[in-house]
Length: 112
Image 1 (spheres, rainbow, N blue to C red):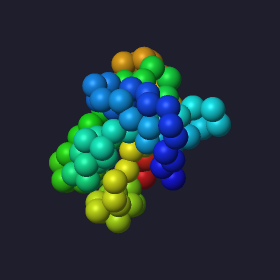
Image 2 (cartoon, rainbow, N blue to C red):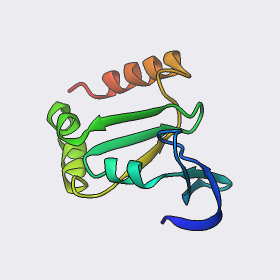
Image 3 (cartoon, rainbow, N blue to C red):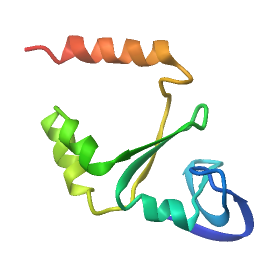
């Protein structure tokens, strides 16, 4: 849930505007989101790395078209009309080896 407080902080997504609109994604960690980025979330999936702060913004239609996992695709289709900004634990920028290990483990368990 988004909250509004009197302090203005830099938008976590674009890092250009200042806003008081925020949400606490993990105890003590807040993401601030300006009106422009909230509007962008209508047509894009936005992911924020909670480890390094890097932001990934991808068009919803493109992401959904490229998904191969049927259940994940169904979940994202249900969220297509929602404004969603997701926190992720790690990303390819801050832990490329961790991402590769995760993908290797996923490939091993995904075979039939």
